[in-house]
Image (cartoon, rainbow, N blue to C red):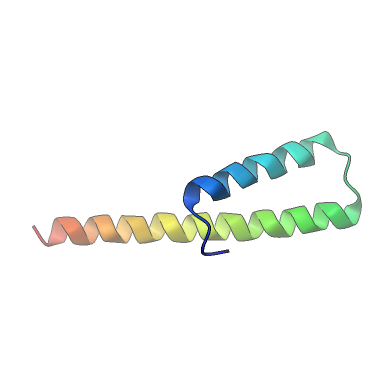
Amino acid sequence: MEDINYTEAMSRLEQILVQLEEGKKSIDELSDLVKEASELVKACRFKLKSTEEEIQKAFENE
């Protein structure tokens, strides 16, 4: 999941949210969607933290 970019991950999270709000999924499908969403959130957090660290390093080197 780490190879997905932030924009793609956020787009997929929005799609999952729509599916969850529709309420037409089975328990197994819901479970799979929640697991996928959890992984996407982790990937987004990782990318945000990495970007923050890169920005901090860039300003420290000036």
